[in-house]
Each structure stands twice: as C-alpha cells, then as structure tokens.
Image (tube, rainbow, N blue to C red):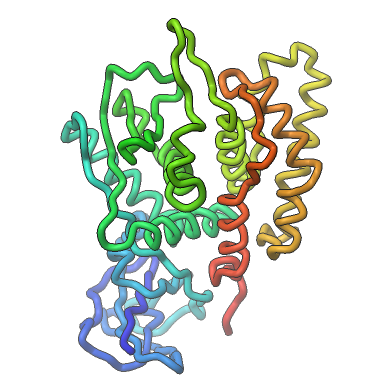
Length: 347
C-alpha cells in the first residue's frame, strides 16, 4: 500500500522530489544543484518521498497534512555549495499528522475572519508537526486526529462571526448548530480555537445530545449555569493546563475569590504539582493506568470543587456521575502515539 512520507528540511532551498517516484527512500539533504543526496530506507511500506524546503530563517511550510502519513524532520546544516555536508543531519522519528478537520463558515462572515480562521488552523497544524513542545504537540495532535475521525467525510464544524453576542471570552461553542461563534475577529487565535474545539469533541464524542443541557440559560435577565456546566468547563481547563504545563488559566478564574495571596499561592502550587504529574521528567505523557488514577482520584475532585465554587463565571452544581471521559481518551491516545516518542534519536 502506498503512502506519502513528507520530509521537511529546515533552512535550505530546493525543489520537491517527483511524488510519482516510488523508490522506498527518503533524503536528508540537498546539494548545491538541489539534488537529493543521502537516503534512508524504510521497510514494510512503499513510500512516496516528498521533500519540502524553505528559505533560511523562514517558518517551515508544511504540505497539506492529509497528504502525509508522516513527517520526518531533517535538522542541522544542510549541504554547502561544495556538495559536502559539514556535519551529519539529525533525523528524528516521524511525527504523524492528522487529516484536516472539516469546517464551514456560517452566520455572518468577513474575508478577514475567514483568513484569520485559516491562519489559526494552519498555525495549529504547523505547531503539531514543528514547533510545539511536548506534551502540547501530542495532545493537540490527538484532539485533531479524533475530531477528524469523528467527522468522517460528511460532518463539518461551523465557524461563525456574530458581533451581537455578549461573551466574556470572545468565543463560545453552540451545540445546537455545532458551531464555534466569535463576537470579534480578534478572538480568532490558536488557544481560543483549541479550547472551543475541545468542547466540540466533548459534544460529538462523549456526551451527544446531553451536552445541550450543560450550558447556560437566562432567567429574568440573569445568566444561570446549568448543573454539569462546571464539569464541562473544568475538564477543558485541565486539558489546556496539562497541555501547556501552566496554571494560568485555572488561577485567573479563581483569583478574585482569594484575597489572601498566601492561600491562592498554596492552591496554585498544589495545582501545578497535579498537572505536572501527568508527564515524566522528559515531558512524555504517562500510560493509561497512571492517567486514570489521576483523573478519577481525589485531586481531580478537589480542584473541580474549587472551580465549581470559586471561579468567576463557571460556578454550577457538579454532576458527580460525570467523569472526564473526553480528557481520559485524549490522554490515552496521546500517551501511546508515535508523537510521544519524539526526541528519540535515530542514528
């Protein structure tokens, strides 16, 4: 079975290989004539090799991810004018890149909004394959992979610009229309988009129609959070915290409830230890049994209760039977993925 393995050579110029050249090889560099030099052989699969190159100092431009079964990075100084390498390129294990999720623009839209949407998605995909660090790379990759599988060939997620929406965070996921709505173009950025895509995945993969009942409603002009709303939101914030190894999102939401900074600092220190316990000293995600113990244990319940009673606008009644199944699946998928092995040198 043929598959495409894309090689990205940073800091060089040249032309791609002929994609029809099914040679079961992949190159590591270009000489002064832009010809492929050294080759590596991968057994067990017929590979159509493709080299993608960029000018020195520019951002690596990846091929369309759906065309690649994997991406392999060639780093270091590429061939000099003499055609002789001054040092051996560093070759790492392939990074498997998911097929693109399907989107459609609904509601109001502008050229700027659509451009920013595409740019944010491209930045996310480039980050997965290039400049994101562990465990950001692996968790985002798993999220995109699982969304793409859930959507299949027929489903899409809507992107909507609605400036009439009164939103504190600038974006919201609407399960009734299966769309992410923004009230301003400027809120279309990677972290906001990943947050809302996680809600979309919660809806489509875990909760289905029940997700509609976990939102907010208005009673006499007062916004009320339904039971389970905090379960959904804390799971999302924890996903982002583990991903970035940062307490910022969680602490910012509860800061106003803790005028005593010593108390707030103590909670932040405990939360920091908790989110770091999902990865080892090399920032690789632990396997499923460790993850499940962390997600279904007392620490999770403790921080969920803090979020439910102290956060600025996520307070709601906790549904005890709701467990972080979406996050558990993504963490498990990421921990066993090829991505989680990045950094292992192949000599």
